[in-house]
Amino acid sequence: MNHATSRRTVLGALLAGVALSAAPAAPGSPRTPGSAPDRAPAVGPRPRATPQLLLGTYTSAEGGGTGIGTATYDPATGAMAAGPVITGVANPSYLAAHPSGATVYAVDEQDPGGVTAVALSRDGTHRVLGTRDTGGAGPTHLSVHPTGRWLLTANYTAGSVAVHPVRGDGSLGERTDLVAHTTPPPGPGQDGPHAHQIITTPDGNHVLAVDLGNDTVYTYRLDEKRGTLGRVSHAALRPGAGPRHITFHPGGRFAYLACEVDNTAVVCGYDPATGTLSPGTPQSTGTGAGTSYPAQFLVTADGRFAYLANRGHNSLTRYAVEDDGAVLRLLDTVPVGGDFPRQIAFSPDGKLLFAANQKSSTVTAFRVDARDGGLTRIGQALAAPVAVCVLPHPGARPAGY
Image (cartoon, rainbow, N blue to C red):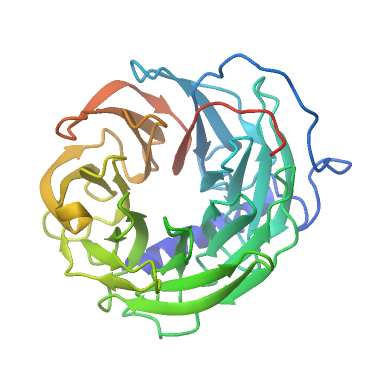
């Protein structure tokens, strides 16, 4: 079965079950009575927070969660312990934190799609600030602009990208832009565009949107006063590549693209002056013949190693990064210790790597060797219902930016 069709079938089942789950508030309406203040009152110093994991799930899937999961972890041992669930968020399949650390944002992957803001607190009394409409179905990725003033969202099913303003208290304002990916035409086996990711480039000058259905990565420029996206250029991948997720090398001149349909990794050059992305030759994921649905790259902070999550192969591919980011050299693959690693993330200090394993409903942890980039499984797997996203977090700071 074509993977895009498979995903749409699964998503259709999820959307059909949304009415049975905890549905979000109407777009533009807060989930709790009253309105949040623009700025929280000043507070004094507080004890250091325990490192946390925030966990995305599908609330309408069989065996899914009931909201955004939480857990704590030990940075020394990788031991994880489940915490309370942040309820009142439907299908929070992807999460992103505000640069302040005081707010987390979740996509509501359903139809109509939404984005929800949650204020984090040190005592665990996290508060849902409200939900806004994304203008399209099936939002699957979101990111916060480095200024902290704008939230960017990719609507997978609709094939569009949206922008929302971030208010002073971390809540979201009305959508300021919605851009549909109408050209080029869909790739082989696709029924239309499917925006899968949207991020800001390291230089802060451009926004990239990865579209799996169109085999395209779009470059936009964000108007930081109006919150609108102006298209600059687009980079075409080979037909049927199915680009899913792009991650930059810390040098800012190269990025690594996971192509889930043709099971390849692609090194892309990036020109900060023009925003042009130049894809290179597709290369192996190290998972052998067939399609293993590579999901996502991570790159170490020193730029020496890269890792790729492979869902079908249930592994993490390790690459050496050479020539200042221009080359990925395949080293090996490591079993992930779970089934279908949908998303991976480093701890804030880069010493641990966490994998959210969707089909086994687990999160696994690895020690990252700073010398050779080797990965070593540590601790016991954490049970997490339909784990599709793991977001390590140093612990909430007081609200107010």
